[in-house]
Image (cartoon, each protein chain N blue to C red):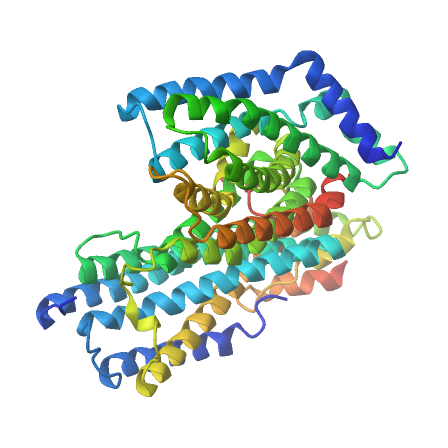
Length: 242
Length: 93
Length: 222
């Protein structure tokens, strides 16, 4: 049962995010270098960290799928990656806004974390056409798990390589992450991070519950020999959950 | 780099937070559509089951319990919003 | 003869006989160099530009070979044969990766001297470049064999390989060009962070060889 615990989880998410945003605007001090613009950091970086952890989580779920053969792990892996890709879109857009405000351009190659993230995002974006290209559902699930594992191994390698490639002379744009954060900023950041993490978990659970409900409906339909639904064919990409 | 004046910086910060909220709300909207579809499917299934059980209800007076009765009994598990007739049918068969 | 050696020998023999992949890869590389000469409007290259042209060309040529790596297995039922045979299935992965490595090395044995002929002033960078090439080839071989084995069983297989492989080899390319760029400087080869880049290449190779080895069994299940 996927829906269990969704209510307390959503409440916790709303509470934490509300607390986080309040801290951002009423408690956290103004940054000496970047001024008010630095506040974007509290949304952009937690989203990025949670998205990356989500990708790795998708890889772990994939390992469990291959080892157990239980298709539910494939569904979890798919939804984890799916949610992290959506969070990834948010990371890239907020990153671009931050770059424009800090540096005057919508995209900068100087910020290695953002660049690494773009590459990771591009890789995981190929997850969908990859799944779509494999027709047999059982094989699709297996291959998708292999992809998720290889991609999960790729994430740290990629970050390392991009970070090494940056010129040692050129200043970092988002210097907030470097050097210690003052305590009040760190507190705000941690609360925001917790909020984003809760948001990710809640949305993943929500999606799994919806998928499960659809899956149960299909199962019911089959058991009753009811006529097939006229409007929408089953998705060729997303795994069926039942 | 020099910090932007507050009114200009405010727009960018607001933009970032708005994008974040918008993405969440778009996702909620997509989930709402999915929920609608599930509700519609459930409704269709329920009327199908009612119709089918209506026929067999007429026949069961003359015939013993039919083999797919078990499936129908499973199928008539319904939410509390449904009329009580459907709950009663499970007992008939 | 071990399964690994048998498969490898079969692949190399068939490639030598027909030379289909290798010839295409070499011709593609040389023609691409010519296109770059005109596209960039340069007759000599150095530093980052040289590294970029060389590695992008090699990468795209590699994709030609990677696309074809498992075609014979698919068409002639090689996958079923491996499944039925009482051997370690990862022998297929190892053999294919090794074959790909050899093709890439053979490609570079021709394409890199041609590149030097077209664009470089001296052949001095070529010796240290060999180390970079070999390590990069290993990484390309591992990921190429892995992706190719999945793509071959799908629709639009020749689209899938470039699509998925390219982002996956970005760290490899970063390291390869990072190491090559100082080697190709105008004043003669420099070795800025050469050891670091080689270490990154080595790490990449290790990770993907391990991943390929660990998951390949699951790819052949049916």
